[in-house]
Structures are given as C-alpha cells and as structure tokens.
Image (cartoon, rainbow, N blue to C red; front, side):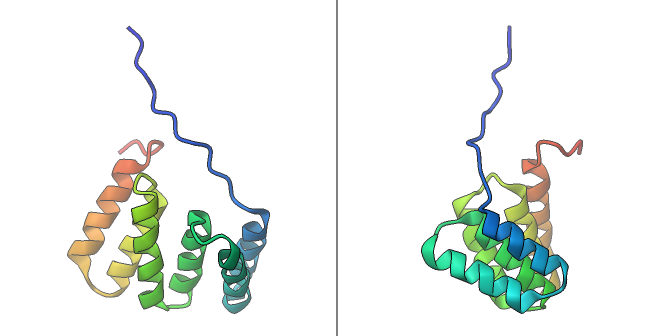
Length: 116
C-alpha cells in the first residue's frame, strides 16, 4: 500500500524580492523595505514579500509592524513554518513568551524537513 504524499503548490519568489533580501543582508533595511513596499503596492497578497518585510522590520527592531505583517502571513499561509517563526520572534522580543512558544511549536510542526 503506497502512502499518499501531500503536494504543496509551487511557490515562487519575485526576483525583486531577491534584490531586497540582498539589501537586507547588506544591512540596508530602509532601502530593502522601500523595495518590498513598492512590490507590495502592486502585489497586495504576496506572502513572500510580507515575510521579507517582517524580517527587515524585526532586524530593525520595529516589532509592532513586524507583528502585524507576520500575523497576516500566518493567516494567508498557515502551513508555512517561516510565517509562524517570524510571529514567534515578534512575541519573544515583546517578552510574550507563552505566545512565542506556541508560534515556535507551530513552526516546528509545519517544517517537513525538521527531524524533530
């Protein structure tokens, strides 16, 4: 008897977001956020853009806005571990540790490549 594997839809990242990630890694958060914001002006529901924006905001200690974007991302893509991880980081930085733990556990349970 063969076991049916869950097939996730293919998710792609816009090339402009790769450029924004490069800016983020170069510690240029304002430039990176500008690029992501311009992309979101035309692609409201682009979850990879929301996730990247929340990464940039977390790096910049702008936790309030990062929280809102991360929460939205978990609602739009509830099966993606990165969305839950970002939300957990926001709660952790706000010292809401029980909420952070719940999010981190959800992130781990959704990561198919994690042996835990």
